[in-house]
Length: 514
Image (cartoon, rainbow, N blue to C red; front, side, top):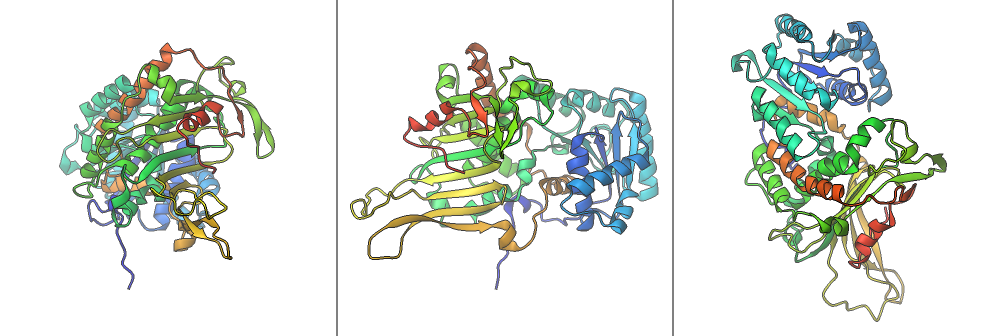
């Protein structure tokens, strides 16, 4: 008999996975995110019968589109980016629930028009007044959108519970530093309570990420050794082969430290390093994640030069094709000192992790696209086979592959066939695609469904955001006082700057070959 273990990140509420009728309002609906991710995700939820029978998706943006034109553009997005190509009958039924409201983001009349339209849909479709707002617009408009929602009585605090639920999803970047993150949190809390705010990080919707806690806490062979006594070090890599993809203006203001390290990589670290929560509910899980962030040893002043490496890609080859350097990209300063690569060595000062170095790296235009968490265990205290084997005995490594080819592998040493004692590493590997024979849903499918249901486990809380920014802001402040590196300092198609290799070499370690 097969026992099905429920994913603890999904076991928080034990409620039906089909949400109540609702209206989903996407601010900035003509942008790339809606077309590539949000509407394809919602379409796939409809195919899987995970959307409520009555729903509406309203695009709100500045372009003068009609309902019909909005539907045509979203169909193109589903055709190109959905994991399932649109079925004509299903799409026809789905598209009837797509609408469009044209307005400038600062025009209060547009929000009044939106309110009137939502009230009309409530009456016609029986949506119960349930509202989910998705901020897919530029972060520069977040304050304006939230305030205008409050002006016309559409915010969470201006609506009574009997009028239905009101929730808001905020895309990253959530702030630019610690101060701006606090200011944005304060603004949101003027109009919404914390349980109405869903700060989204799509990495938390990926199948392997969700299974980190299951893997740790549902398998007794790993949890006893998940500590400083047995783990030598941890590596977390988020490598991209693409460049900035026309986002020069955004990236000049962000850089890799803000864009990837503050959000995605620290989220992965939280799940790897956290203690078992007292219960698998949203607040208990997030309480433990915040404890990890607060236990990270600050990197300040001169320590930044020793523990943090930044890089910027120059021209090179990706898959045999010549690509330009970062400074040659559109909307990028030809003398830019914005980093496209960051590597960090950090420590978590608590009982479980004291003294264990954690190496994290992320960058663009690297050799290949891969995101992975690798736990390298210590060598046995006495190697019995050192004089009797031809090979070097490699340490055991547990690797959790986030993308591509989501899965888990464990490297162990075995004897090769023959009369000699030759020892070689082999991988015990599990892949989600082949292991279950089904294609896992996209991250946004899971996250949008959770938001509609009201399960905030996979979303970040205000204190979690501020704790991560506190760590990152220390590094940003130190960089302002340090001379910038001589950029570019790594070729496109490489694994990053040589200083990142030296970050590990001086500890007698090296980055994994991926």
